[in-house]
Length: 169
View 1 (cartoon, rainbow, N blue to C red):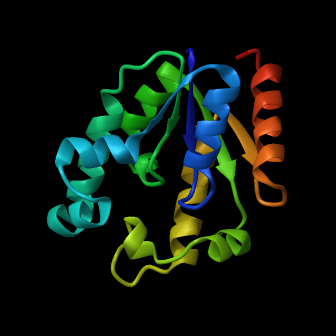
View 2: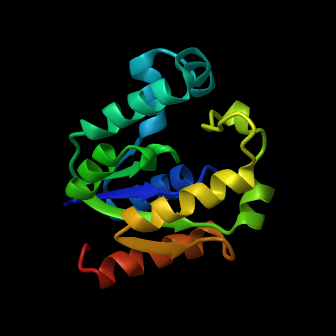
């Protein structure tokens, strides 16, 4: 378990924090959304439109289930928690860190959900999506770090301290 896996809602800062964490710890950084786009040959929003929600979730689950990385900080897509086999693999290869962000700060950070390639079912609001996903993030996380009330540097420090406390660093 020499990897750090970041999970959380879109807009929580997984990619931004992941790059800083990898630089700070001398690790590699990988964003699974970019891997999916590269492997499938399209933008996330187009893949969701073309394959449908379940088809996209299957693709994301397949990509994450087969990651073979070492000493890597992995920023996952927010919807990876819908595929238990993917989460089981990620928990096996690394320490899963949930970047927790309250609903209000999340709503302020997010722009267009469709443009971002967020998996949103017809009629589902951001609040509904948030309420559906939070229990899944909590279920799969080894570590939870609240990142809503501080800047990225403070969040980085909190993640590093949590990993040290757990004996991961």
